[in-house]
Length: 137
Image (cartoon, rainbow, N blue to C red):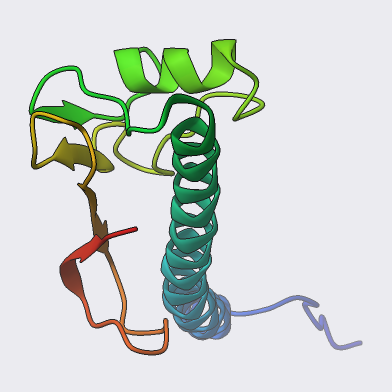
């Protein structure tokens, strides 16, 4: 009578674990790029919403908000608070990763001109590359 052992050898198990590890690594890498593209899309939508809120503010007050020359829109800043309190924006808008990434800056003491600055992680948005950008009214 032969004594046959059933099961896998240690080499077979190691090869299987290595293959699974490589597959997981490839999937993780592909998803991280998708997440960055998703954050950039959200940033563009956020900036459109902030810009629309600032235009509504302008239509009521005949100027854009003038607080400090440069304000990081982090949700607790004076610009966001003012836009929310006057119902121009439903809630605070912050960057998906860095809450100080959106920057509001006005250029005249009369408050008739502003620039929104922001940073993109990828080149997935048409007309924009990786890095810092600005948007004006």
